[in-house]
Length: 334
Image (tube, rainbow, N blue to C red; front, top):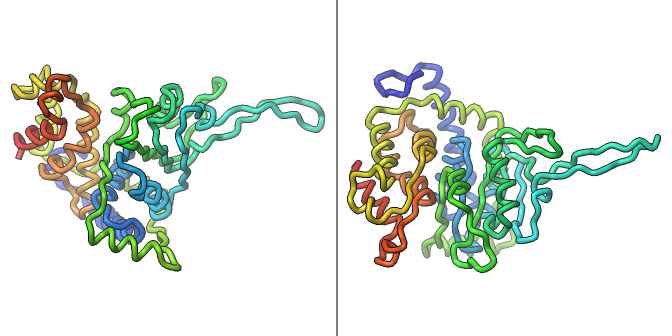
């Protein structure tokens, strides 16, 4: 099927989308019963997974990031694991390693022991605390969906998704992710403090004798089918033009916005446009629609672009921020 909205959705795709919407609504409801007051974070995390990608969660400790990953794993029918990143963490601690074993006859052979990355949903907790070498091992696996040990490739489970976390405040002893590695994440999701009413609900619900537990809403096979469905949903010309305008005008050497040319040091590459194309479709499906709108592009612009742009030192000294720049770009396509 083509991308243009002039081409109607076929009946089979429409029926599959209707079934997917019902399942996704049940999944959101099941997640919301455990993770309180983070509807935006849940929506973005689900959109990233539906798009077949990874997300970077940025927030201070105690905002239910670990709980979110565990809940997503249960609700979406995925196996999950968690790695606490530390400066002494080695690539083998993530990927696995070969050990020399001897059988009863005295014959020796190497056997590969899989690391915790061999899961469907991996939480990389405080990813910027690990050394660049260890970060690279994870990010290579994220891109290639396989790891190579002693010259032999080992395919990761399908689907495979990483939700990594970073603490935005405590930066001592960290190794910030390079721009090329940040680009591997579809979204940067900012996890903020809950509202007063929500925090009250959290206190009442999580300090009693019983704790809420997540319920499974689908199997991993269903999720894979939904990921394939997302790629078949049509994208209108207006949405495509909005994505191209947004991404290209965020690049200082291509922008026709004078402010961007003066303040932006580097802008997003083609992966940003690909991320918007996929996540806008995923967001539409989550909300019960078979095609995305320009409003979806505007809504997802910041989580897609925020970690793919940087301002010049002079612009930051003058009080400019990436968020303000993205807001200017969004106004151009409204």
